[in-house]
Amino acid sequence: MKIAGLLAACAVLATCPMATAQAPAPAAPSADDARAQAIARYIAATKATLKHPLRDAATVERRSIEVGKRIDGSPIEIDLTLPQPAGGKPLPIVLLLHGGLPDEATIRPKAWQVFRDWGTALAASGAAAVMFDHSLGVPRRRLDQALGETDAVLAWLAKEGPGRGLDTQRLAAVVFSAGGLFVPELLSDSRLLRVDRVAMFYPSTGVVPGSPTAAVTDAALTARMSLSAAAKHLASQRTRLLILRGGGDALPGLLKLLDETTADLLAADVAFELINVPGAPHNFDAATDSDAVRSAIDRTLDFATRR
Image: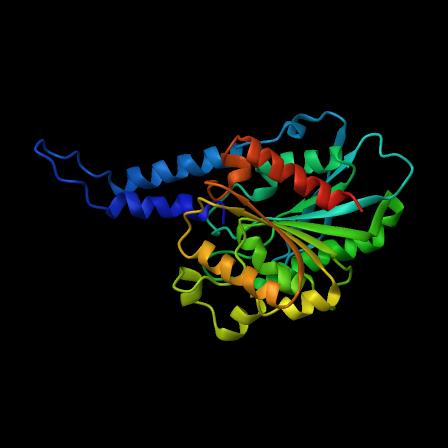
């Protein structure tokens, strides 16, 4: 959902009334101008860097590899980022899962600088980072299509990973925003490889009531994407969670749902850690340069790569 708020700004700018004053208020931007402004913000967001010094690490190698096909026949490509030299031991794997983007977002997340930086930081920390574009979408969630693409990546890792020095028994995931909707199914016993720990940045822990997604999502799909509904299963699997909460997150309803979910995780006795970054906005890993954000990223790098 990194872009969703930016594109939504087009509608906000085009429709919100201007404050009255003694001097004539400036005219609201036209719809075309508002859209141009939203697109400019989106492009700027795709260029934003990870707010962490390891984004500049030079001792990594990134390869783009086709690992399968989408339902429309287009290729599924991963960016595989590895430390150099890799050393003699098999590398733990960290899967990066972005949030939901509208189809009109032409610059897909694999090309966003922040995700390239995450790959660099993880590889510099001793892991193999895997990034790819999925089709979850927004507001309508194409969960099964996105899971099919994820399963193609997991199948490739299961087949090719050991020969490339990757340890498929040590697989973590770092999910962002609406990428959190993957987590219950990602941790299902039906996945080809087991994800044993998940870090969740400013996550959607389910469908937010009253959101555009809620209006187009049936009860069955809502339940499949609910972390609260999966809490007992997570506890039985002993899955470890790290939740990184932006204290200033302004996405309507997201923090309320997240806080309700953490209560449900506690009730189920799930092993999880919650880090609140005071005042931090949504997308704080790319938006806020502060000691608290760097510390949260440091904790994530350690959580995902040290076993």
